[in-house]
Image (cartoon, rainbow, N blue to C red; front, side, top):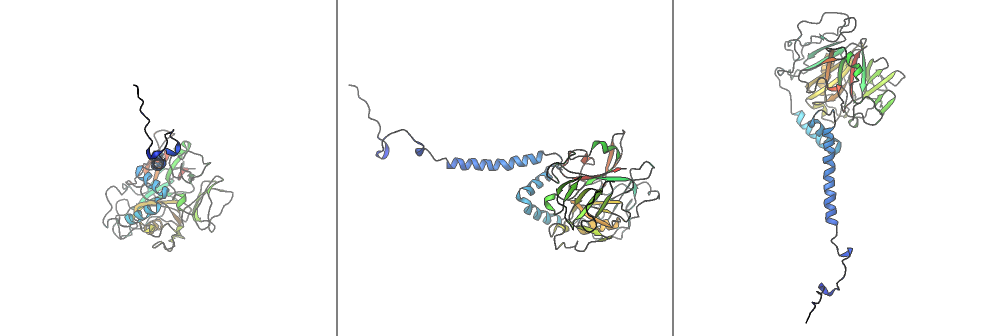
Length: 389
């Protein structure tokens, strides 16, 4: 006899039948896991792109900037204020390698040599070469278009060294170059680097100001406004002859048909040859966060003297107040802070290179933590350069 097994009875007395979508396992958990994986992959991919981007100043700088741009700015600011405010420079002599090599002789007295820099603020004897102007690249008549030296502006910390560069307005033309990321927006040309055609005439290259999102000021170049220009902001203005004026927008400077470039950054720090009131506490936040001015860090500033010549000042271990003191010592009549922190401060002077189409750079201070030729390749930040007329 052949027997056939009866089909198994469905549990709970339900009749057997084809499985429907209603009987399948809900996809909720798998969907949540997928969303979480994608959420982790997005910042990882974004961070990877930031590290791979050209001209960012190294992975440390790229990492900090990425954190700022992705919601971490308040935390980064607190950490920086805590760290830099507690890194007071030594009270002794400058560290080895922070002082430029002394010139063999003082610059020969010629027409237009910048005024001598006052003795050290500490009252101690000058170091070799301190305050002595070193001539750089010369014009077609053999007159130096740039001089450099160094000074010590902080009596409480004589180890602090500030480099100074003085550029003759009648011999030079200034230029502003947009970076790959700053000031942001579209329509900029130039690829974020120095035009190769201007390299043979180079006198100097140097950093610009803070990132656009961290300031109220604007950016204008050749008819293109990257961010609106605002009254009351400290401004570098370059006209169609390449001459530079620095002052407060709306008071000292306004737009006209000769303006080619405007770069704004915070408020003036030097006005009529004196530090602006409020630098010691920054209670109204005119120069960043309320404690930003107290950080001992790399800082840079730009100003003009009584003759309209351009003066750049930079150094490590500077507060906003001691940067202003260094600018006054150097002869600045109106001046502003530029960028701050390691890898954001960069200045090189240039001399003719081994061939007619090249030039050779030298950093303003030997311990500047950037390449001397930084702006020959694409950079994320906007910058300035100066050429012979």
